[in-house]
Image (cartoon, rainbow, N blue to C red; front, side):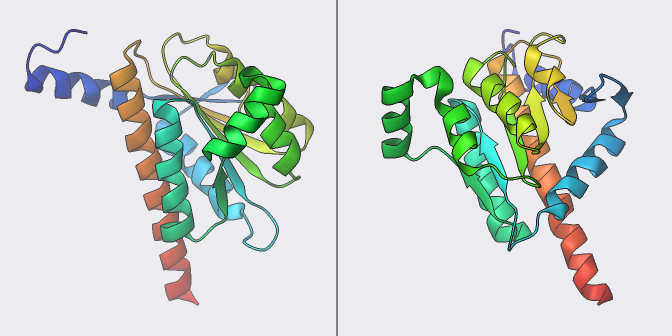
Length: 198
């Protein structure tokens, strides 16, 4: 979409967010409300002493997962890790190839009970797809954010898959960032309510 004016641009972003689709691992659709609740439950299942959330994404999606990691650690209080540190990234990519980078990281870090949060606008990034397959083999649950084509391969790999119906990087990435904020805000609020009830 060519951004003709701010109002139209914001209206299109609002439409995309409002039409976010969620599917389970078997492809069955669920409402955005139910899918969000299930994703928050997965976040809150992470135990600070034994499990963690791993977040992966390339380019703009790397920036998004780094932001989500900050909120998970600081606001929600769960252990979360990204693999964007330049020396580590370039060492693994140089030795094994960039397509295998996240896969190698997941092989090294993943343990049963962990959660992998995978973000790819196209849903076709090979390094993201390989990592999801390895995570599944290791007993890790998976949440995916994707966009572009509705049959993109990443959308088939998560326990809960959030899909934005747009082929614009700007809209998909912005919608992913908004959804990430929403989920972490919900998780933070749930933790605060649990403390009040204690």
